[in-house]
Image (tube, rainbow, N blue to C red; front, side):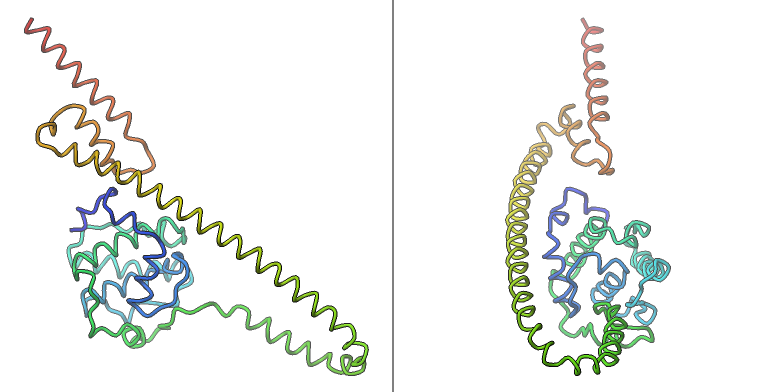
Length: 276
């Protein structure tokens, strides 16, 4: 099944919002970015849900922060793939870098695979939170608490300066009022500006998704036409398929297709001249 999910499969046209919704609703998480799943722990649990008991969840590190810890998670995932005879090579070096597109592509593939196994229906008897909590390692995917030390420092500094604040209580009150009003106005303006940016980005994303769907529909029509038995072996059809089904997304298959087309046409011409 895994080998049949090509780059032109509709799986790779699923948006990141849909992928995040799938992860959060299925595993009871609260991810807001695709990169947050770069550790490989989410992927391991998705396979655990699809094939209960196959993944050694006690070895999965949901608090993986370093590339070394993330690689250990992907080793577990690759072992599961091998055990289930899933022909899918995991590009670990790319995924652990946290690159959004690489992680999105892998999660798109994973969703397509899981849906093909369970029909897109979640196992009601599967408790994702309980499965995460059963291991000895940290089982929580939660926001970073890097700001806690700064918060403690601010509290200490505030306590140390309380005498100064009390001694200037009257004058401080007079100064804080206008500053507070001004800060509130600035915050309101910033919020409005950010809200406008968000609205503009949503419009841009909507436009891009429509454009993507438009060109995908065109490619799909071409693919269906090429699969017609009447033209399946036609040189132009074969050349077109070489472009459609090229494995390497970074390099154009146009040169290979043109080379094949020229060789075929030349061979046909030579054959016609020989017969003549």
